[in-house]
Length: 204
Image (cartoon, rainbow, N blue to C red):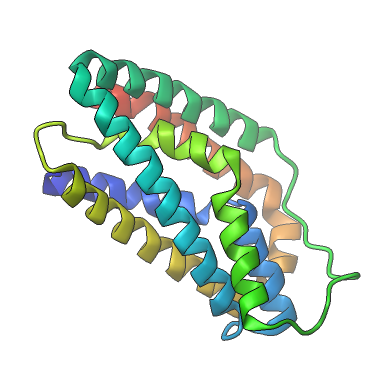
């Protein structure tokens, strides 16, 4: 992965991390319930789940690409169109809301960790998303293991920073999302559409 490709992936990772999703919503909820420090268990579980999904997608895609470079081109276009479709859905999505009425006030660390892990690792949309995203950045002429390490570290760092910031500022973030959530979704959705259409063209 070249420096320019990594920078593009880093910017994309930041955008993904800021986009409302199940793990971000879970961090927001647990942050409001248990505080930022305790929500570190939730975040850690989610990050490990993301790493497993990234590994599954990346090495599966890598094996396919090694059989034919044509598959990489196909995956880039299919993935790009899927990302654009997700952006359109996010544009139309209602604001994210968090209802704390029936939530438990206390929870053990391992229970929070398990919730974070299962939310990331068992979400089929997460698998589809990374299957669409990662082909845009894979270089078949470079070590797949090294590229996996770079991708996994970059994404988990940006996701950690974002989720911890959300958890720590949960009390302020929730009313803000209620006020501007629709506009926030439209901005994030527009970014997804732009990324989905631009990335395949970058190396076409």
